[in-house]
Length: 441
Figure (cartoon, rainbow, N blue to C red):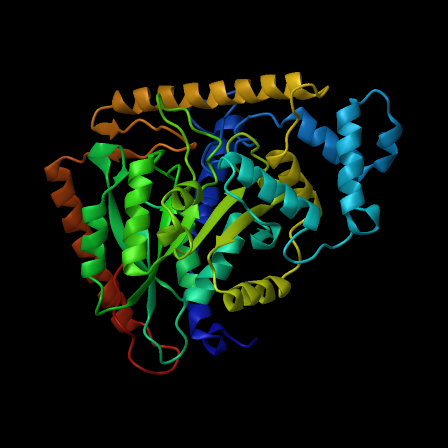
């Protein structure tokens, strides 16, 4: 590779992600605070910049870690100090692995046993609405699965540009994923005064403004909301499904925080459940891809890198392409896949580990709920700040109201910086010998 100029034009536009930027900023600050390099020294710093529960101090569930420990070291199957259900589940999972080892590959779509466990979990969750293992695809994180679907939506050479309706605010990982897949983001605003609720009028407005620029192919939904903490009710979900059906849009639904709902009189209802409750007119023709992950609030095993997506009403030919794209990648880590199985099929009443598992879960839920409420109170108590309360997830999305005089000063400073930038670019020779192009900051 001689130079970046010789690479693919799309690759030359790749920028540092917001997640990398946060690591670069928060890492040194944490180090300064703990090592006394700041004007104040703290004995402990809790880093919540990444929404990583374990990084912030949430403890992993004992049952999950014990089962994985036995899977990694099968000699522990004979250890009678471990609960019987831990050893039984570990043996069951090892038997599902090729060669009885977590060191073997699986099919790119995931272990058949785990996919079946996920399908059974979805069926239970949705009150008997059937889910099928062949519609479940396991990937190394939900973003990996989403990227595969986005690539399918991207228009080829000579075709109209494809776009996806994306909420504002949206998950920080979504814009770079869209850019990397060659798909344009079509923003639609969430209604802050309604607790960041989805407003159908704003969806229609966003759609009307873009018909000439790109072809809408899908709508992305985060429920519970990332980063807003909003949880949609059944009526709101029905409205979105009606909208998607009328506009022939694929529903891309991030439901990673479905287990983390704590708002009063609030419950999680899946898009698939509502879709099938609406009758065959919708349940047999509206395309839906939903995502869930190990990185959710209560399991919080972000580093094990495993997630799944369920594909509903997709054309069989498209399903084949999804499998082909997954085959181009190595399977998700086996340990992560086994952890997914444990997440969707935890200890049941009567199992030796049930009581301790339930106690740990309740403690985690209480901690996250109290933290969300307390953080919201603190933010609303700061001068110039306001924050809508969250009903689920692990995020809050506050607003900072900047006084008008400061806003005007900032605009003037920015204008001077742009002017300086342009003058500087005029003096710098362009690599190809041409004239440097003026760019904004």
